Image (cartoon, rainbow, N blue to C red; front, side):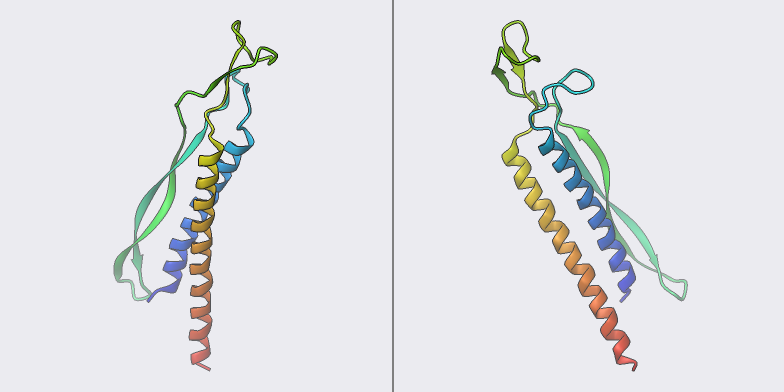
Length: 142
């Protein structure tokens, strides 16, 4: 069993989940941003993952079974329209006093945040257990 290949797979998952956590934090931070640099309300961003199959090669040069890793394939904007509220006092209100809010739903973002943090913790546990297994393996030879 190749422990380093397993850690590489876990490392890719940790990196992907960290990116997802960053994007979710950005969505939450801009949940009330009604005007961005382009003059439009903030658009929610969504992370897409894709798996990669990598060939593993052992110390003797023979190729083993493929190792699956994950990476961020795309960070795209959610195109659903934002809610329109009546707020004539807002500087971003149109002639009728309506303001278009960002399409960020805080409840959905919190669910995504919890899911991503749990996945991150699970992958971190795998890395810690792999390290412990490697340390125990080294103790056997003593």
